[in-house]
Length: 310
Image (cartoon, rainbow, N blue to C red; front, side, top):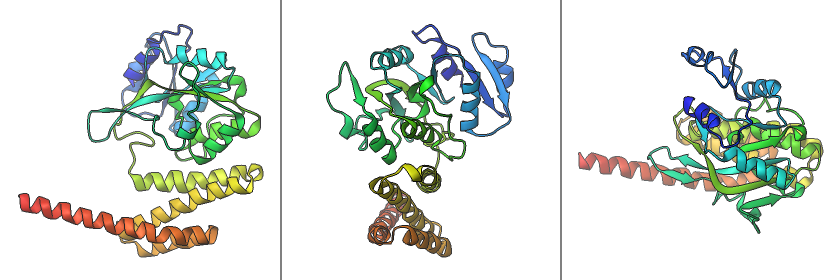
């Protein structure tokens, strides 16, 4: 948290209103921050990441909005370079690549450069920035959300609302989709790594187990997105989201069956997948079974190898 705050204070861009929203912490955050110079400290009862960001949005007075999670921090020129691009291209929002700490080593890795959803849009950069048209954004953000809140600077007048408080993980995904569906919208992004995400086990997305991410993001949040934007979606766009939803259901069903041995819950998930998109669900079934069995064999081999070594 203190690293995040210091990274904002050290920005090369000088005109910054720093608001720290304490979302019901039970440690000594209040004592550390309430009298700290150079920021406005606000405490609120715990309501989740979206409600905290939205409170900061209500209190902000600037024309541009940037949100930084407590376990992330910006490089010195993050705001300056982002705002320069935002103004130069007259975009609605910009986002930047980042260095991400891996879960099991101390190495930093480039997160976005090989992103399979973003790669098709990496065409003809100008001064290191790639442009995304309104149609590009619609195509991209219905498949994935490549710009977590800490990576983005948004033009305030382009917002059609705040972060989606109904979403479990993808509250920022909901914010972008609200913008994209409310009016023509453009964005730019850079592969220059302008900020850092450290994995500490408490991250909203990266700190969770994979099966929990599947349940909250791929299943529950995708279902919310389908319901919220159904009236705006073409047949092909609905198909993309339904495949994402059913794929999540099938992945979760595999986990329940092979890892947790919960046959009834696994069968219920499979039936839900069949009701939504039967052909796709059936096609996914042998792939998931193969992956599960292959993983089981690998785990048994590792256990046997470890036992022999002892």
